[in-house]
Amino acid sequence: MRFRTRLFSFLFLAVFLLPGSAYAMHISEGILPLNWCLLWYAASAPFVLYGLRRLKKLSGADLSFKPLVGLMAAMVFIISAMPIPVPTAGTCSHPCGTGISGILLGPGISILVALVALLLQALFLAHGGISTLGANLFSMGIVGSITGYAVFKGLRGLRMGLFPAGFAAGLLADWATYLTTSVELASGIRGGDPFMPLFVKIAVAFVPTQLPLGILEGFGTAGMVILLSRKRPDILVKLNVIKKEEAAA
Image (cartoon, rainbow, N blue to C red; front, side):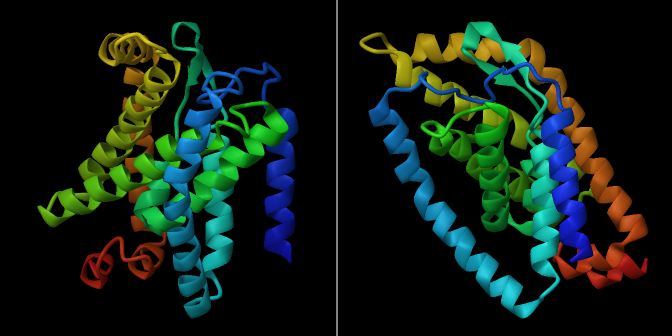
């Protein structure tokens, strides 16, 4: 009960204390045609169902898992609620947070975390939209989570340290999200024009803001992994991020 009270208080303060500029997060309402909105909903649905099955399985085995998921959802909500307008792209640039949630919770659960964060932002902050929720979830939740998880696990498998693996995971998860957003925008609004020139134009428009933001998110992701490894290595062992031998060392 105490955890829930703190979580709701955290979300309440986040909603009402964030800057009031109503910039659209990711792709806002009215940017994509209805058929493309439905397409991205359909593409995202199987991943959401997979995440729900994973959540049921893991929370059934460990009652402390759901509070951790709630805490991660609040964190991703805050991290991704800092929009920087990119007028030439018709959307915004911002950190994502799904790199770290993918590392800690796995991509399936991280997708649900992103869904909750994006839904709350669409409903209460006018960031993103309900019609474009499927597209925004696909870019940030699905592509971002899978990229962060895969990069981290791949580099750890090559015996790379926690910091460089976490940095690369956060960086590439962020950039992959925006490349996917560029694909979604270019494919949805191009009409009869060629896809590639518009995609390149939108992707380049993100470079001035997302290049440094991606690097910053890389450092932030690596920092959180290192902090947990020093303060609570047992949590990382429990989540299969590190092995018991590493925690003992």
